Image (cartoon, rainbow over all chains, first blue to last red; front, side, top):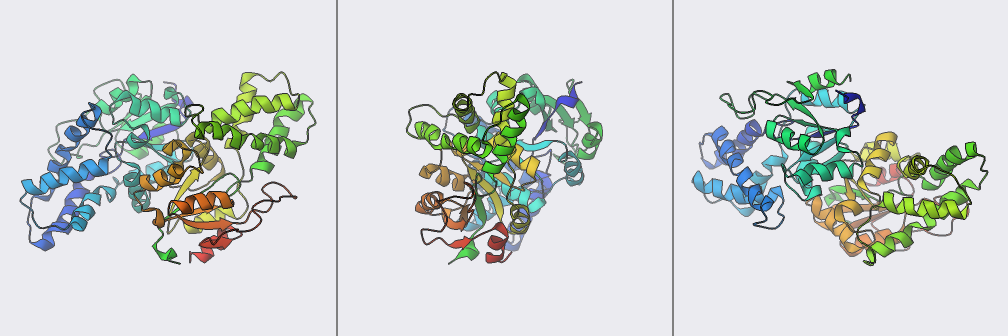
Length: 237
Length: 237
């Protein structure tokens, strides 16, 4: 498969590296339960996430100028709070809850896997999250990224080809020297279309116990595995 | 001095973190001595570096479109080889010698200092070096950056105000939450002008034993010290 020529691993983050659903549910409960709200917290997380792609799509289509994910998340949060009839938060409280996306926990295999992978490869984020979000998350969780790339560096949201193409360019690596690691078929198909190698990591509960998508690799990716430690094994680290 | 509110340290790299003169001299000798050249290697390094500011100045002035430092370094190297009457290198040999800037060694106090500083602060590069250069250098030398910022992320070369301003913006920190660390008065004055806090680190042999510039802090910077371990001490790390 020519995996021996890979020099950099580029990672999707939300869902692949971190459990956004469980972490957002926890953060929302922490913020809102003391105010007397008893919501379906995982549902709150899912409904926030449901606004993610539509918000980016307006940027991708050029219907609005470049806007980073913290800003999109905050706009979506204001909508979400209306949907759940949550009222009376101060601007600072909204900001803190919005930055719940900076406080997501990694899946249990992530830190041991990355610790092995970092010895041989450049580890880069290639996420739609903005730089500050990625840095704050990494600092809190101990994620050993060598460099933050992705949407805010490329100024294009995945799955636009330029999000992947420009990330490889900034590493001064030809795309085939980069291995895109993601739990989402669509992300890998888009990365593969511009020449990156592809590794599918199964995350069967990203969307909760009744997940129906991304339960298997739907294409001939270079690697298919179910954890970052298995990925390290597969790459001989 | 309000240093307790600082959340991120932003580092100049060439001269402040790494010894470009000694490292380039060593790399040039490694590349060219086997071909029979006996040059004044430190002078070769200095003459390469002398072309650095003029090359960036054309970009700053808008006389040419954005061009990253690897590209400027390579153009300057071709000039330099003519100056030293070095002939007959292949394109691959020129590329390898050009990437000597990716293989610079840190000053001896840097790794111990950064290891202390990283526990409390976000550590970011704010260099004119491009992303790939910074990543390759960090991976080789073990520099524990949390994020690569600076010229190629901001698309402005220091000391343009936007190089500093946009770097702080990407961290989602107000400028006064960032401490610019540099061995060069001019860099710190420019950072301070857009609101960053400033730390001068004396590097009295960056330009060799007869250095005449930046031998003292010429302005009222927030910190003045002579090593990264002293900086860590000063910040209580």
